[in-house]
Length: 175
Image 1 (cartoon, rainbow, N blue to C red):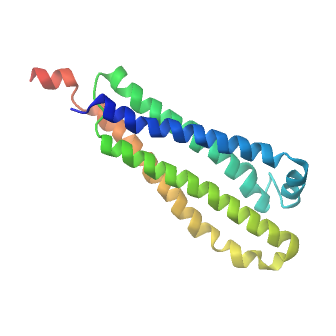
Image 2 (tube, rainbow, N blue to C red):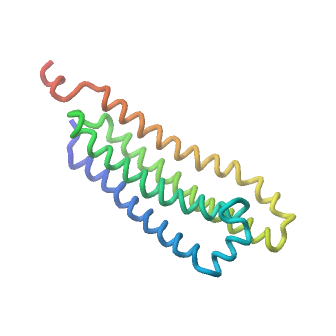
C-alpha cells in the first residue's frame, strides 16, 4: 500500500516544475516581442521557417505546452486517478520516472532549440554557407531529446493504464 504522503511529495515536483515552465515561457514570450529581438527573429525566419522558427514558436510553445500544461496535467492525473478510480497508483516508481524523463526531455528540447536557433540564425546573417555544417547535428540531437520525452510519456501512459486495470483496493481486501 502506497502512502498518500509519498505520492503527494512526488506530485509536488510536477506542480513546481509546471509553474517554473510557465514562468520561463512567459519571460521567453515577453523577450521575443521586444522590438530589437523581434526584428532579429524576423530576419532569421521566425515564425515561418529557418532558424527563427526554432526559437519562436518551437522553443516557446514547447516550454509552455509540455513544460507547463503537460506536467501540470500529469500531476493532476496522478492525483485524481486514485480518487476517481478507487485504486492506488500502480507504481510510484513509474511516477518518478515519468517526471524525470519528461522534465529532462522538455528542458533539453527547449535548450537545443534555443542553441541551434541562435547559432544558425547568427550564421544565416553572417556566414550562411556554414549553416549546413551545423545543421547536420540538429536531427540526431533532437532525436535524443524527443526520445527522452517519449519515454516519459510512455511511462505515464503505462502507469495510468496499469492503475485502471489493476484490482481495486476494496476487491483486494475482500479476497
